[in-house]
Amino acid sequence: MNTANIKKYAPKARVRFVDTMTRQAARVGISPDSKGGAVIALMAIKGDVLVTTAQSGQTHTVPAHLKRAREALAAWVQRDGFTQAIEQAFNMFLARSVCVGMARVPALHSPLAFLATTWGPVR
Image (cartoon, rainbow, N blue to C red; front, side, top):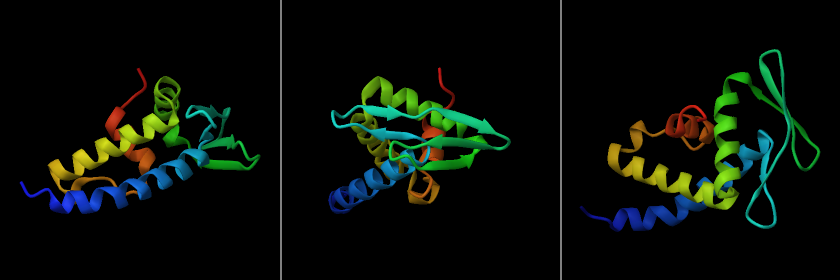
């Protein structure tokens, strides 16, 4: 297997993935703290949306069907720390993209969906 393309792609993809995951996690009330851990905001369900208040004070709403993915991410970052969880998610993303091809990997604009398909329901 020729790994030259992976070696060129991985550093750029990692930066983009980490930035995207950090932004998406902040939208559901999960943000990194200064020590590599996570700050997890309270969540409320109002109708068919989840309402969270981010660390910055901004209120965000996302579809309620993302509740399981948000809970999985919250459990993951509480267990391993925010930075470590995002690094693990990138490694899984890269491994999946190499093994099954990029056409079958969720887009980077939907990292919470990627987590939901990777981790499934919270145990």
